[in-house]
Length: 339
Image (tube, rainbow, N blue to C red):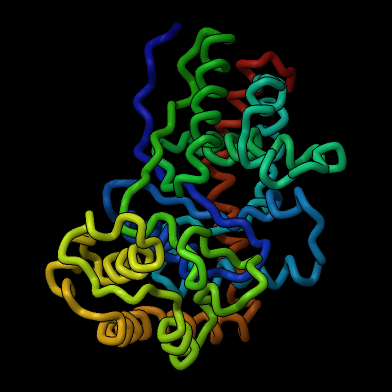
């Protein structure tokens, strides 16, 4: 192989517009996206609308959700002057590189993807080909920018491992160190936020109960009310993290507090250990309202100005293509495409 290139430190990540943003999206993803701005990385953040249509979407709802995710990014602190922000379908290089990767990835790799098994369930024969090939498109999302780091939740770690497998096989097959082996960034007190009604289940926008989640569009009163009614247990809070074992609801609320306060679980428990939830919930509600209500207010303003959102996404797409187009063309050259 040729000598390995020095890759620009570059972050890529995205959120699928298949419903509204929740606290889980904010703490598990967007908050970390914001923190990585200005930390020595080029930061590229995407609304992955091509991924959304692996299952059927109402077109009007998809357009609204795409703008809502973008509004959530901006309201949370992603600065279009510091990061590239766009929606995936405006940058054709994602889909074009995904086809190359469809021809690199192996069927056996795809069949091992647990998310496909979970989403397709017992009706896998009726699942879309797009849902099956989802990880190859995710690899293209990342590698179209030679991204070196991807902030992901634990549930996406397997897909990132597949991205590394695809990069490794491409580099080996063509005898060139062209694609980087992207590193996952999995950290923080609440990378996996759980339901407020069942601490054993992930907080989800698809849950039938709106009380199970905090939506990033919820106002201050709604946020506080959901925290007051969150499921807990009758015991006092422990003074150390070990005491949260086998207490999923308690662990979830403490994790949320720690993530919102930019601290760790041990520090929270040193302060609140021994207190009842009747004391802790108002503390958490006050903190959540202080952190989240300004975001929901700004999101509401942006959603009343769709032209502003669309202009930001179009400009971001131009910036994204300036990076991805040369990488795709070099990929075509390596593969042997005449152009």
